[in-house]
Image (cartoon, rainbow, N blue to C red; front, side, top):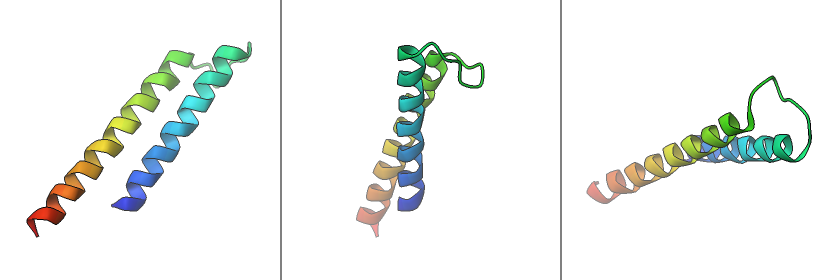
Length: 62
């Protein structure tokens, strides 16, 4: 489960970098707006946080 959390965090960082590059430079990445990358970054980070909290809760109960 920890690997999944690390993967989600990595994808969130990648989405954040893509959004930042697209805002600062006049380039289009796959025809997607920067807000979409920003939203994806937030959602992936929230999923990673939720999975981490669930894992900690399950470990405490064991």
